[in-house]
Image 1 (spheres, rainbow, N blue to C red):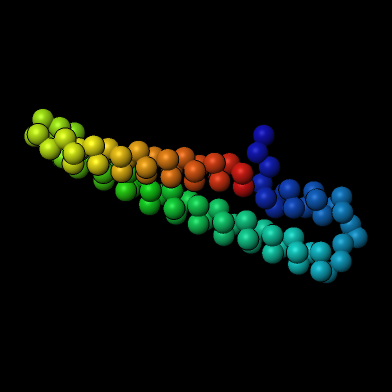
Image 2: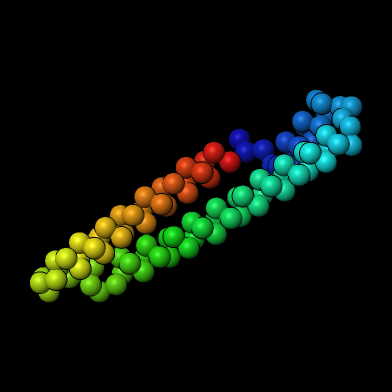
Length: 96
């Protein structure tokens, strides 16, 4: 069951009352920071996914028969690096 952020915030507030104004501001700041981090990670993932798709869809990646094996291997290494970076983003999102 997924609990919305506002519902979770209200449940916490009810359990932690009375809270000082400073504590309430801290909770709001934490919520904003978490949202900004989530947005940044989402944008980064979208950018990486597009970059990876562009690399994989480029005509030269799949055409090793052209004799340019070094180029093919370089592009494959770049694609694998992008996949590794994408995996890192996914892990960061899971930790949010």
